[in-house]
Structure formats: structure tokens, C-alpha cells
Image (tube, rainbow, N blue to C red):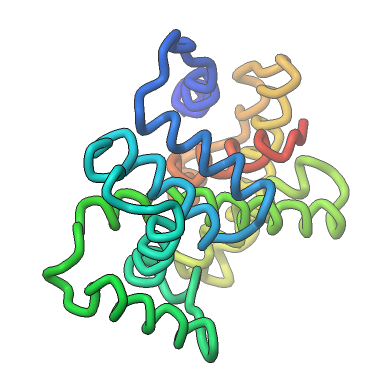
Length: 224
């Protein structure tokens, strides 16, 4: 068990690639634009145009810069999750007018692969930002890194799993031990002793994917 927990953090260090793929460049662009604007739509449009330019340079020449912005706006509306981007009122009317202008009123007129690929990139950035804000909120409330880790882990675990009353003490203990492991990893002080109190009862509350997610979220927030 100790080796498994240790192995998760060990994967943090990855070899740096000398050359970035198109997908990696688009992800970097999305991160930059979203950091500057905080807007799903603006980020989607930037990534959409960049991807289309890279993959279909001849097609791009057939459109003006304004046309590309308008088509990208239509795609942003059409392929986004409603909880992330859901224009209403005048903004929606403008998009509907653009759909008519560019003959994009029917599903078969769209490039689904392009639309979905761009949404996947941008939605990932958006969701990461929401998680970062969530971590920052926990920092204000719980102060210490270990407390923040434990609270974030427990909240996400309980969102997917039911904890019985008689299990709660072990659940809380397990989350706190995992939090200590995180702190030890980040400060290069990890040893098996840190997680020695984990036992057979603890395994029910150890979600390695969630541990990795929590580890990454706090790392991104620069918490040690």
C-alpha cells in the first residue's frame, strides 16, 4: 500500500519533450487565453481558429477574419456544455443570426470532430480553473495544506460514495494520512512511516485516481 501511494507522486516528474505536438500547442494557447480572459467563448474561438489554420490552411484563405470569428462563435455555442457556456437573450439571438448567415442551422453542416476536439481542450481548462478556485476557497477556510488536502479529498470522495456513520472515523483518518503523504512528498520527506497507520480498513477509502487528482490540484495551487 505504501509503495502504491508513493508511486503516484513519483509519476509527477516527466521527461520534457523538445518539440510540442499540435494538441500540446493548442492546450498552451487555451491556458494563455483563458488566463487572460476567463472566457470559455473567447478561448474556444482562439483555439478553433488556430486548429483550423494548422489543419486546413487552404480553407482558411476562403474566409475573412470576421467570418472566422463568427463561425468560431457558432461552434462554441453548438459544442459547449450548458453548465459551462450557455448564452441567452441578445447574445443567443446574435448567434442564431450568425447561424443563418453562415448556413450552420443543421447538424450535418458542422464538422463534429473539429467542434468536439476544441471543446474538449477548452472545457478541460475551464474545469481546472473551477477546481483551482475551489482549492483557494478551502485555503481561506482551513489554512494548512494538509487540512486543505484532506477536506478536498473527503468532499470529492463523498460525492461519489456513501460513508456510514460507523465508518466516518476511519474515513477521516485515512484522508488525513493521505494529506500527510502529500505534504511529505512535496517537501521530499516521504517515508513508509508516514503512511504506516493505513490498514486493511483504510483501503475502502483510498481512491488512487482521486489521490492523483487532489495531488495535482494542490500542486497547481503551489501548496506544499
